[in-house]
Amino acid sequence: MQKDWQEVLDRFRYGIYLVSIIIEGQDNAMIASWVAQCSHEPPFVSVAIRNNRLSCAQIQQAGAFCISVLPRESLALIKQFKIPDWRHKFDGLTCRRSRQGALVPEDVIGFLDCTVEHTIAAGDHTLFIGRVVAGEFLNDSEPLSTADYSGNYRGER
Image (cartoon, rainbow, N blue to C red; front, top):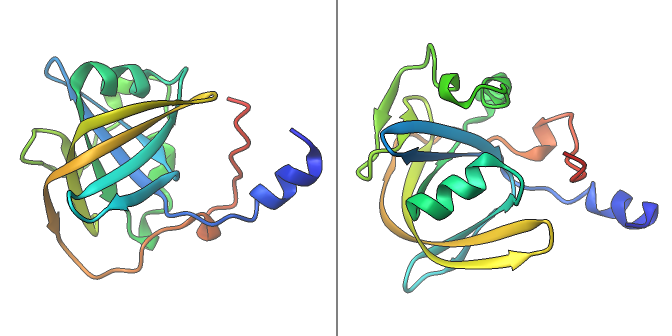
C-alpha cells in the first residue's frame, strides 16, 4: 500500500471492541476495531478479522461471536487480550456469560450475541456478518475508540 494512503487510513476513527468466542467449551477473545452495524431489519453487525488470527478460524467453526462495547476507562484492558496464550485472556476478570455462552467482562457498556449469517473474503481479512440474536445494555459510559489508543493497526501482524 502506498504511504500516502496509509497516512489517510491512520486517521480513520473506530470504536474498540472485544470479540468473544466460545468454542468446544473454551473461551477466547480479541480486540477489534473494524466493527459496524450494517442492517436494522434484520439486525446485522459486521466485524473484519485478519485471516491468520486464531479467532477467525474459531468464529468460522463456532458460527457465533459476541461483541462487547468497551468503556473509555478500560484502555488498559486491551493488553490483557493481546497476550499470546489465548486460554488465559480472561484470567483475573469478573465476567458473566452471554445468552450464547461467550464470556463478557462485567464493566462493559453492553454486548451483542451474534450468529454468523454471512462470511465474505475481504483480502487479508474475513468479514463476518452477524445476526444479533441477543444483547444487553449495561451502562451509559463513554465508549473507547481508536482516538483514545496510541497504537495504529497497519495490518503487518
